[in-house]
Image 1 (cartoon, rainbow, N blue to C red):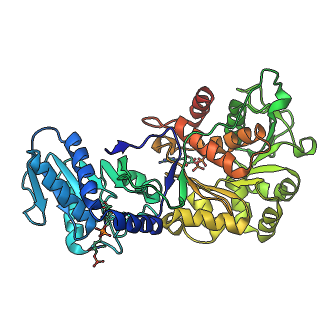
Image 2 (image 1 turned 60 degrees about the horizontal axis):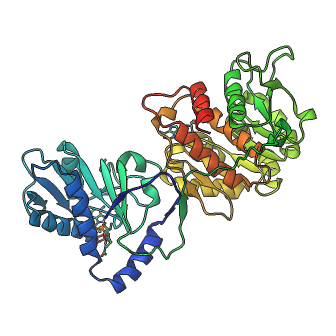
Image 3 (image 1 turned 90 degrees about the vertical axis):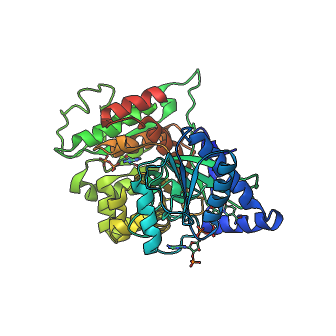
Length: 453
Ligand SMILES: NC(=O)C1=CN([C@@H]2O[C@H](COP(=O)(O)OP(=O)(O)OC[C@H]3O[C@@H](n4cnc5c(N)ncnc54)[C@H](OP(=O)(O)O)[C@@H]3O)[C@@H](O)[C@H]2O)[C@@H](O)CC1
Ligand SMILES: Nc1ncnc2c1ncn2[C@@H]1O[C@H](COP(=O)(O)OP(=O)(O)O)[C@@H](O)[C@H]1O
């Protein structure tokens, strides 16, 4: 029976190539696999059917359509009225439910005019949409539409494997609630990526003191942008770092670190050689001059915002970055910052977020969190991860500063942990705290992180 994908654990993701290998092996042993796929679709459709009104099963030319046809037959056997296209005319009245079985993993080009027209009719009919395997028109590996549009489903029942494209790029906006049925086939293929779940790196022993929990130095907050650095510092503090210091660029020594957070201290690199650096939040252009020393001296670094822009613009800084020890540097670009780092435009980054993150990680020899819906964590030599937590409540100024600070705070308390694991733990917790209706102001996000921790 299909089940709703649980968010309390990690899941393996399999790309198209791995899914095809798995499917071929499974079919060799179970040639009637499509009967089970169709049965899974029919069971979920029956559960979603309101009890009256026709179910429109929109079938395509391949096996995705085959799943739909099996489901349609089984639904009819259960007494559910079904309209099956293209064999029958598209229903004139609003159906009770639509099963989108037009295109699945066999999508290999922009939808033809005829299929695009059916996809548009499915979208326009006003009924809840259950997509089979993938919303039609969405690429399984990237989560991007292959043509002008992909179906926006309310539910997706994905079969055999979980595909990366359901969880990043446009995928989360198109898939709706994700259900999974492995059809009883063991996933004997290495995962292409991990779908993240909760991961706790912190431990507070009874004998702990503040020195046990590390130090964070936030460098940023040029005049007019001090809020960004303060949000990062507050997040590091909320995460449990033992001491958090702020180097507010260009501010007089008399300026308090944060008038609303007396726990925060002013500090500078000179005396804080063991701190985790969180560098770049609201830093402006001044950060470029400070970066060589920070890159050379601080043992662990989270680089965000203006630090990333400075690095993108300066090959000498890129060389310093590459020279750092493996596992000690974490970059948190949003898609525009990533585009600058890669020397291409944002659309090219978004077209394949997993590939873009991997390329940045390889070029700069560090861990990269490519932010946005379905953040991607990439590190040379490690399996990438995709984050399913969070949502549009985070699409507001300052939430990225909070992430950078939280990552720094986490790393301060897990000094021997590599950047990849810290990033995985941090982005999941940040997204989980950021799941809300409406908009979550960044300062409130810090408080939610503190209470969920
Ligand atoms: N095998 C099994 O037992 C199982 C299969 N399963 C199910 O099978 C699905 C995969 O089936 P699939 O490989 O047949 O691919 P599918 O998504 O139906 O599309 C291929 C067809 O679409 C066409 N086409 C492609 N792009 C197009 C475009 N842009 N515009 C127009 N046409 C386009 C393409 O045409 P062609 O390129 O050949 O001209 C071909 O006819 C998978 O997602 C899952 O639902 C699972 O349930 C497990 C059990
Ligand atoms: N729609 C969304 N779904 C999930 N996460 C989101 C969404 N929009 C934004 N986020 C997250 O919010 C944060 C925004 O970071 P960023 O763009 O750097 O903001 P800022 O620079 O204003 O702090 C990132 O962690 C990003 O992944």
